[in-house]
Image 1 (tube, rainbow, N blue to C red):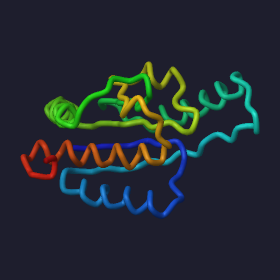
Image 2: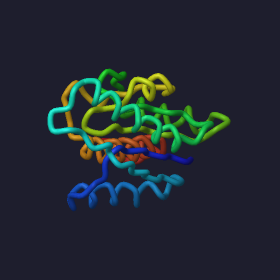
Image 3: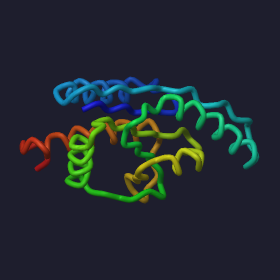
Image 4: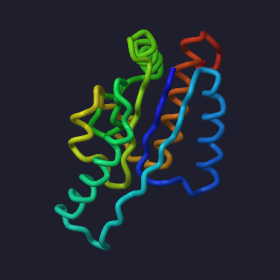
Length: 159
């Protein structure tokens, strides 16, 4: 299986880098998993809604250039559907059994994702009703993908 995670913003903190690196290492057993980091478009100090929308639109264009179709594209956004870990495993199964076993997850920057990216997605997922830093969301997503694979293989990791 081929998994691509497109992230707006770059990890800088060592603890996030270490955690993401650990899950990427573990995921190698299940196929290719790559992280593509895009630069967040700089914002003014107090940006207007129009300025934020323009920046999100520019980020959206860069995101969509990195999405490799055919794939199952998943936009990570607060208004998305909430699923549990066994359902993540089912999502991985469904994609693996499809004619295009490639998944592309998209995580926006501090202002989220442009509506055009959400509309282009096959699925919109939310991790929680709570708000998390987008850097932490990356680590959480990697862990859930790993957990999903472990559920599929029937190991005790999920317990």
